[in-house]
Length: 509
Image (cartoon, rainbow, N blue to C red; front, side, top):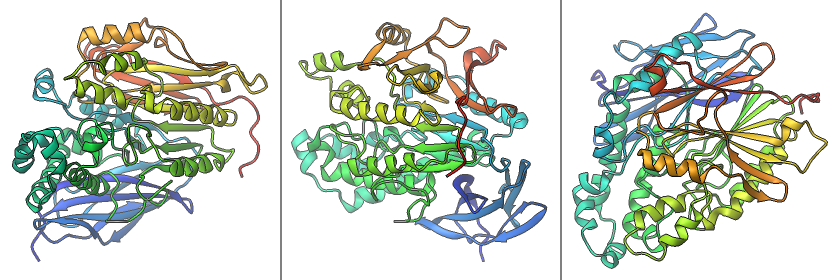
């Protein structure tokens, strides 16, 4: 046997709770034979064998599955490959029936070389998260999109670069050749290995089980928001299928055609619903079924609604992962103006990506109504990224006077980016002006971007990540935005407290 040379790993992934067991998978990427993984939980050592979930050019992605019975106290689980140095890691399993401690981040990369040059210490916030993890011991690391940036595909893949220089009509008709497939597959595989093997990132991926959902840059900028003639062209579809297979492997840790144990919707969708003690996570896949006229298919929405209705009454907090913010300035007027002028396609794609786009407004309204209904029974909080700022939004309804007054408010926490820099000052000013007014979504329903408690800021134009820390005494959750500019000045995080609903909960379903 050839001893495996590690190219990436370990990377942890959360697979939910079943039969009172905290399920975690772990992948390693290597170019040799895999060893046995040994993990220690509940003072008992367990050896597990691997399964290969992906293979390319002599390299394999190996997955191990770990299962830890939850107890009344938090447990530390240590693991590693027998006989292979540098393969070790550990994670913390929360007490049974508790609210997990969650770290959240998005936008782990750069849209361009120009953006990269703006940043001196690229992984500063990953190092900050590691220092906080030493004291807080997070149970889940939720990553809300753009875990890798694939936009350089147009320049770094020779066959795709050559194709991109053709005129539009020829591009849309050109086949996705065997050479293209080979080069594109190698591009995505190497992108994940190179990006995630950076020491600061690798340390956290080996320390906290992840819950990841992709956004456009994990495929390429604006996927799903380009004209249909481009979206359905053979080369676009070929690139997408390669991005999808690598997302499935690296971010979901699933083999080909394998479904997530808690998947929702069609076989095209990666949306998932997880019950985690007194919390629930609804992770929305807003790319796999996206077109200019829909974000998520009607069939997948029906599955999501059914899952919402089945959430046990014992769940106090429901976190909705929406990679693109539901509450954000309305760019609809700008989008209309852009349609008059040529040469603005790139910006048009970005505008079509947002929930406020004309083609998505009705779907957004249905989502808001559903979340407000869900808020009658549970505290609902939206977690978003994408926009390279930190922001605090609220959805408020005056329609139902009988529920707990705070039940009529849904908070949205936007945290972005953990690596990508903030937009220029002029853009931040425009966001502040556009977002200053309440939006009247429907009769008695408004959305608003509000200032962070104790500050005069509704947008924070500095890199950041978010921590969701439960208060053990009364099930409040403290949301802390750790902001690069403030950390460097030894200032505390921006904080918002989420209270559980006050009315008496009935017995679990």
